[in-house]
Image (cartoon, rainbow, N blue to C red; front, side, top):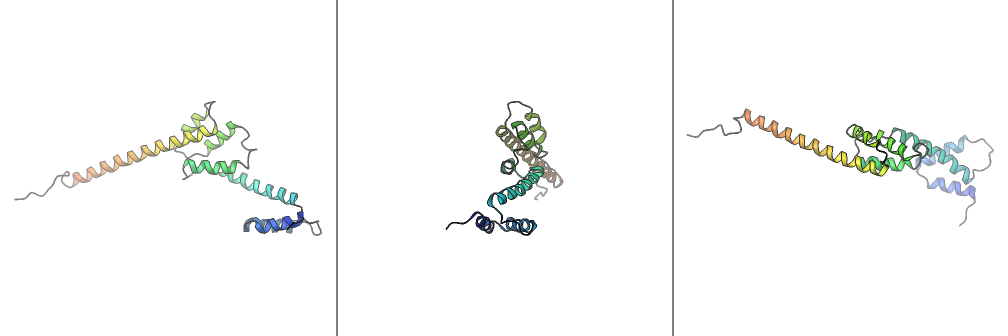
Length: 167
């Protein structure tokens, strides 16, 4: 089965998810009455403009938050494909990645980013290693803190020794 370019536009919109299809309907309704049928290239340009604007806004707001460095990196990589104009150089890409890191990592990563040999892949690996180290240290501190507080509880009940004396 062959479709004309105009029919191809209609067919593609039916294959799109609900949000994209809703966008297409609003876009089509906004066109002037009596306009010639939409051509595929016109649809692609309008849709990409819409998609790229949404991706740029999402990329600008992107932060690590409660995600792991790996999860943040995956989202950063997904969105960065659509906003190459925002991160045209390796330095810009590294700086933007570092800006979105959590407070736990940003200071050490920002200092490391000044290294002229730092590229994006090295920064992701560095941030992951730093995250692992810091989380391990936090867990060890929590473990020591819990052990100390359990020791204090034992002191309150006879210093951890049996208070009962048989006899």
